[in-house]
Length: 606
Image (cartoon, rainbow, N blue to C red):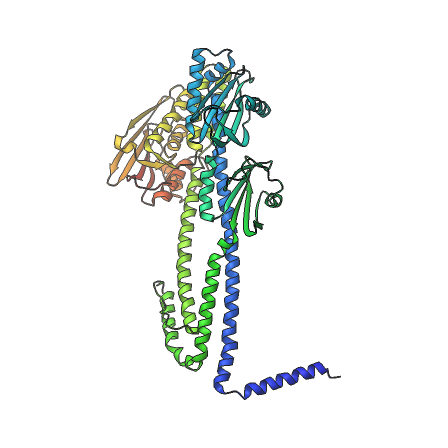
């Protein structure tokens, strides 16, 4: 049975077709052009705008997450520095002895005051340092103003926190601090550590660092300038450590919707605050357990997309209006610009990206030319992004190579210190531990890969000092370096692995003492540094195998040469192929390692 609805629909279609067929050709062309060209353009423009908006939003979330993670990492690094500062007194036995003694005689007062003052100078944002001995006496240094106005009240709280920490550093969230000498207040957070004597591991007192919140605000405010948003930092109890607007500091915001939604280690979501939409990204620190939330206004994120939308709609509307009047002439006008685009595309195929289509019209060919220009511009942008990515990769490889320093020396030295402590029980252990601490701080600190040659030499001398303690002054170091070369920059940890290699291999089978010489000289715009030893040397076959390993021609499985290859790769990655390391050796005569580095102090090593 035939459906009445289907019959009526067919009649309407037939009438519409008959009406279209009775129109003039110009009207037909305009209608066809309107539906087949203009309508798709509008839909594509809308889809492009929607896709572009989503892409911007997605990229912004990713960028905000990266910024949040970096800010939290910097904050963790700062807190780690404070933890390390609070542990420094544990390596000063004289300081600990003073704390364990009763009374406050003049020598004790002067000694402890001087040490506390030096601790307070390490970080610019530390406001005050308090040290309490086991008898309740306090020694402190304050950069400005006086003691806390609530000192007697907070002292007992600090003592309890220190005892609960049992030697571990404890982080106290932001508090509003008032001075007993100034009417103004400021916000500060604190690091507290109980101090124990090394001789019996019993508490001898505790130390407190008060740090101004400006240490956090500088990092956050610079990030807020980039994101045009605001940042919130809360502790594990949801008490505000810092906020960009400085309205909620020290307030508990457990009921805030953002806090309730930020339950994972990190993430992002959209949220309304004060009636305005925001993108919120957050991350929780594994060190402090503080949570950082960054709010970016959605309007700011989509601002460029709105401009693009309006521009696209304007161009599309203008094109449609123009096309309705010149539809018949379009077919004739297409030939010449299409031929021009073809020639430009051939230029692009040959690798010439410095071409541009001259936009004269806003028709389909004009749009094609505009998109062609956008395509060429995008290709150029992608090439720049690839070059930037390669540069970042190069930097990452450099950092990775720098961190691959052979740890066996550290392990062996620590074991040697342990054995020395058990056998000798004297001050030699203290000296060795102090030197080893300097080596560790120099090698582990990645905040600045650029050092001077003088700093490298100082580090090398510390290393040899430990080795001479271990092997009874077996090694002698002779240095011939002009004064003007000492101040030149170089990559960190390029001398010590070479000397370590000499100790392990050149002097291992040599019973008498060994001599190591370091000489440097200018060679044109470069500097050449020779590190030589009078060890057992190598025969031609062993030297060839080592050279092939250093250059990457054929790697060897043994540990010999790993440090040399590491140094050679780091120098080439940083400065280029003309720089690097080479080895010369003669059996029973010795080995010379030659480094070629740029002599200009303008080289960027950061």
